[in-house]
Amino acid sequence: MRTTALDTAFLFLLASSGLIFSSLNVTIGGKNGFVLYVPFLFSGFLFPFYIGFLRGVVEFDSDIERIRGWIYLLVGSFLYLFNLSFIMIRDYLQINDTIRILMLVIYIVGWYLFPKRVIPWLVRVTQLHPSQTDVSRFRNTQLAAFFLSGLVFLFEETIRGRTLAITHLASDPVAFLTFALSIVMCLALFPLFEMKARR
Image (cartoon, rainbow, N blue to C red; front, top):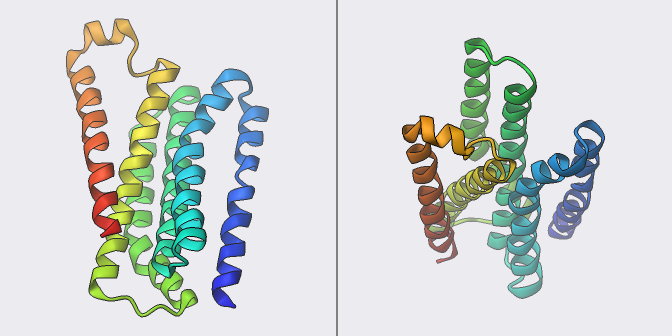
């Protein structure tokens, strides 16, 4: 019964994700609103749906995969909102050091509390008794979700032309190298941690 309620809540949250797109359309509008929604589409909707519902409910009827889907949904949503806030502040307001420090603190606190609070709650709701291997799979899923979110936001930045502007690259090769290495790192580490989480 609890698992059914969890599945229903999962699908309800996924269905509600259209509100984010609507909000972006109202506040920003046009192409930029859609482009800013794309990272959530992948990291907060499509991949959580694939892992949590298609694999967790339909294919394997597995509580482990259900929890992994929730981890993708929650980490993807948290990082999306965090990155979106940063982009909005960067593009429309002046960023000072106080705001950067505040955002870093919010990020660290959220990242610290997630495995301490959210994963145990999901385990309790599903009445699962995870082995050490399962706990390791949850940690690997959290890391995979982190790198997936980073990857889609880097591509979003590329599409909007903020980070990879030709003039910027010509004047700052270090920034280009950092950006390129970040993409390579996310491309390599996301599938690595996802495959470790499936074993």
